[in-house]
Length: 261
Image (tube, rainbow, N blue to C red; front, side):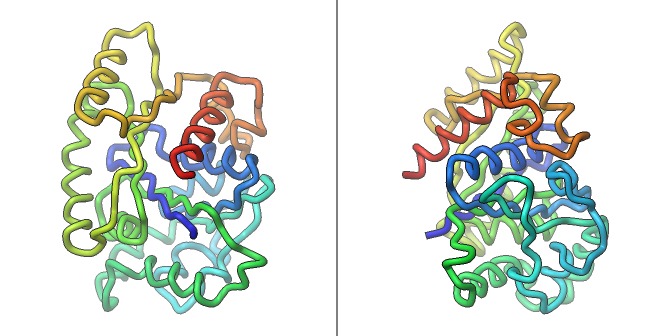
């Protein structure tokens, strides 16, 4: 069974795309087949994998607003076992165009369902599908949450990040109640963590107090190499496999797989 995980946080700059790219890569390198869907108009997951964000009529935009099938939009990446549905700035228009589509909140879910019914499992039997959501709570994010089995929430270790969680959890609850009752929280991931800062340790303590085991044991530390890797179009495990960032995401991948055995 393929598990679909939406990586979501309406607050920008929390390490959402960094997590989508690097967690996907680490899990693929462990031998699992992974599909990364870039559902953000900024297309940072696309360029972060070294793929040009161009209008090739085979992106997430066409998948959502046309009769294009998922299998027509899947592209290989530089990482073995990792495939991607790319994004493009055109996706900005999809928010408006989806309004006029019937069952607009479940377009992505239906495309994924059709895929699992029609595709040859010998070719693309994905273990995990990760959806990199945009930093907003619009129709694209609702589509992503509706299509998902679970939500992974990156949380930057600062005060405003905690405040922003309330709005996101309200949206998740709305999607769960209205469209997708089985939706659960996969986990909260502490990002940009600096153990020398009192605030970072306080944020961690608060998260673990309220959410317990739902908070991943692995923390993603602040790391220069993690910031450099996207400009080279490589996940951290390819750009600098011996860096702290690569080690963090390798540990996160192992923890994620262990949780999903």
